[in-house]
Image (cartoon, rainbow, N blue to C red; front, top):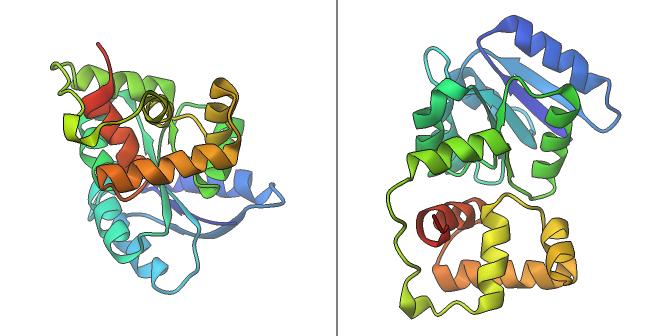
Length: 210
């Protein structure tokens, strides 16, 4: 798995590079100081996951996420955040980043987040999800009646919205992982959404109870 590191703090980049290169299944494809450099590198290198800071000069992580997803929709993106960047995170959600994690979390958690996103899961650290929920305190719009989601589909949607993996959802609902994947495919089709991240956003906007 090839990972691109993007952060204007060279010390953070080098520390992450050393950490990732100690893992047998991770390879650092390169390091960049801003989103513009990262976009240029993506044109030349095969990259599976981009681990990127939000606040950077020239091009920040939010704009970089938007541009990357337009040009390279299959590239997975994890944003590194702090508690003071709620509005940045909220804006970036709509652009399709698969993960939002705090810089303060442990090395093991960062590595597991990269692996999880690579497997197709979304990773929203609990503190980040709490901040996002606080930003969305207005009463949620009810799920459109015309979509007519079944109780089981609602349970699957809730699991995705809470950032759970397919395995975690399957264990909670006593279903096979293949069945969960099928439900997610049906939800994407029924709600006319593109990916798992958009499902999570949909749940936060429409389905989450106060």
